[in-house]
Length: 122
Image (cartoon, rainbow, N blue to C red; front, side):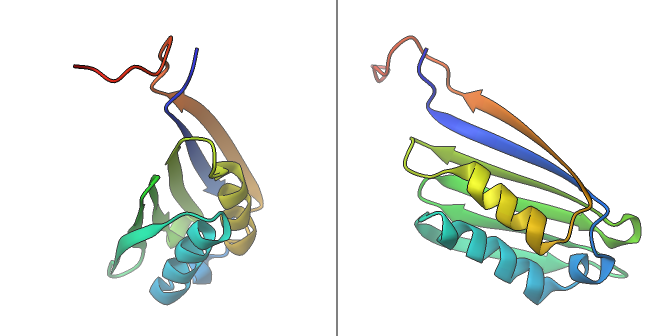
């Protein structure tokens, strides 16, 4: 079976709470993660919550990277979805884990669009 894409989901526990509540830092990490794996960035949107937390998405030609943080718990949920085989989402995941100083990361990888062959629908 061939997969159209790979979806990597991150459960990031034990992160640095100050980093998780820093909009500029989170935005920089996510954009750098996309750049670092050679993704073509199409756009981005990030938001600071009050009293705390950040959410954001980086749209890439290959799909997306997104994150939501809970600084009060030292936790972040992130996912990276890429189509094709030229982008390695696992490398972007490792970068995000390191930059958020996660002491207890968990990674789940899911192949999406499992098809017997790549034949476009008509």
